[in-house]
Length: 385
Image (cartoon, rainbow, N blue to C red):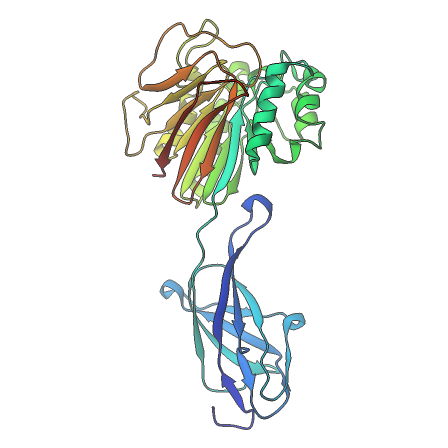
């Protein structure tokens, strides 16, 4: 016991450490440490602890102070114990002292080592190119495949209907919603899909989805940073250079280990009678490659394709190449291939389905899940750069 009239013993012990996040992990991770035996165990007198301070000793940086709010302050009787809980923004070694009414109760200090748990795996799905009919059996089957997977987030890779956003209420909204119910709480639509806008100023996409059509947006999911790009900006010549600048700034500000981007028009694709490579998005793909992004999801061609990780010269690059997919199998009629492309590892133009991805802290698993009755599938894994 420390000398003095307070009769305080520093006796902290680590009970549990857990991640505290908002739904889908969009908030920065905090580490919660629960200490039993009370950080301050009173052996002689009854003292109401007014504050407990924690000073960070992480990475040789300047110390920070952490305090437990007064509403969490326990009243500890002589010889009693009480658990305290406090959240830390990072892992590390922390020193704590006890104080009553702002004054230290002892000269002794205790130490806690806080280790953040690994981010939990997150299951997502992705698909694009749907119909304008509320009764289309293929579109309904794709939605049901997503329901069976039960993802925490679904990336809608655009063309939610044909041929303009005005028809979305007659098809996609009824099958996947109706908005805001159904799957809508977990759907993240790609920015500016080709058939969902008709000009740079078309406001119908924003009125429906609640976000500007021609601006990128991004969010974090566990260890992953996910970016949506408005490829229709290329078709309608809507400030492509400004979008490139915004993308580079977004990539530079991310502190996540893994990066995934999704957009409607494909840069890497096998040709069909409708679509070949969209060279207008090359500056965005270049920015992703330069920033060591990991995965690129595309649609527009109504089929499924997977490419080996490759560089901007279309050469295999397993060390830091982008792993590109085309997932345009959302229900609209499929396009037969008319040719091949470098680095294609799997492709199919006869099966509707959805891409399932399991996002790990340092990598991912992927699987093309066909609709009920479908036989084609494709699966594998990758590691983040």
